[in-house]
Length: 121
Image (cartoon, rainbow, N blue to C red; front, side):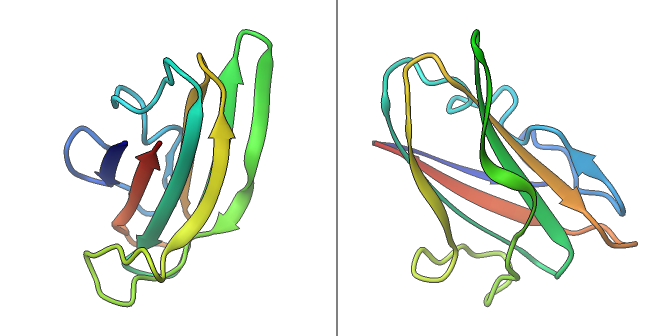
C-alpha cells in the first residue's frame, strides 16, 4: 500500500490562487504514474467553499474521465485535516501504465487551501 498527501501551496504543489486552476496536482508526484495495476482511493477537502475537481486517467490510447470537471470538493470539518470517515471522494481501479490527472479549480476571489489523500493498493 502506498499513500500520498498533497496540499496546495506546499511540497511541490502550486497554490490554488483566486480564480485559479491547477491542471494536475499530482504532476511529478510518485503516485502520478502507475507501474502496476491496482486500486486507488481518494479523500479530499478544502478550507473554504468554492473548490471543484476533475480526475482523468491517461495512456497511449487516450484519456478516460473518472470524475467530471466541476465536481465539488467539500469543506473540511476541521481545517487542515482529512478525515477518512468524512472526506471520501472515490475509489476505482487503475491499470498498469496509467497516468493520473487530478485537476483543481478555485471559483472564488480568494486563495483556498485544498488537500487530497490518495491511497493505492
